[in-house]
Image (tube, rainbow over all chains, first blue to last red; front, top):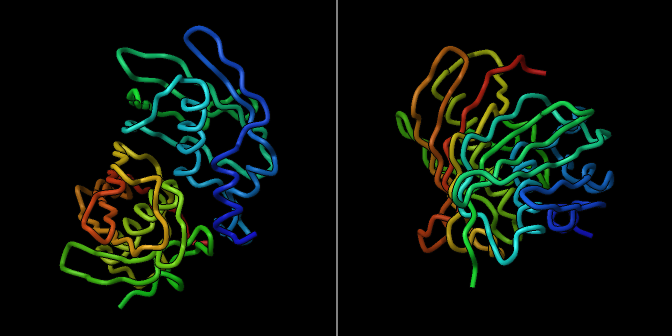
Length: 122
Length: 130
């Protein structure tokens, strides 16, 4: 598998568990997917890029939101680096109007957070 | 001209920039993505990579400088952001402000038709070079 394809596979199918309830959802990232997200970023010092954490956020919203997509992300903040051996939980909750607040946690500590705007797709 | 592959620590598939295509007094453009099928998250990371190259150029430091993404204040995912398939992408970066070791940069990732795939305001924090 080419490096781009391996990365795309991890970004498109990142979770081993997804659970949703009224007003929220959470998911656990597959360890092998998390490792793939650090390919080339960086050799000898692997870190999950912030952009890929945001892709996990979008994946959770898409997995649990019926016929919705994300068109805008705001205030995405990265508090700590995420290493490939971390156990990452992604948690989403509904906010005002069409917004979702999504966060990533490692060992119950918030490592990243963002607001995602959703829109209904036909 | 700056070479992304020697300036940035990224390697494929994380490295998405092939070349710096234009460098003005306060702007910088890069190209990449040709022959590849980039996920939108890679295109967004290309925004951060371009912002980092611009911040380095503006600092003009003789010492190696490295940055980490502190935040994306805003990201817009345009039509076609999830449909890249081999075309050349151009990333255009312009500075917004600098406060101490924090650099805020606007970056637009455009397809060959000039359509905005991803638009981001990136905040970079300087960190010690490794």
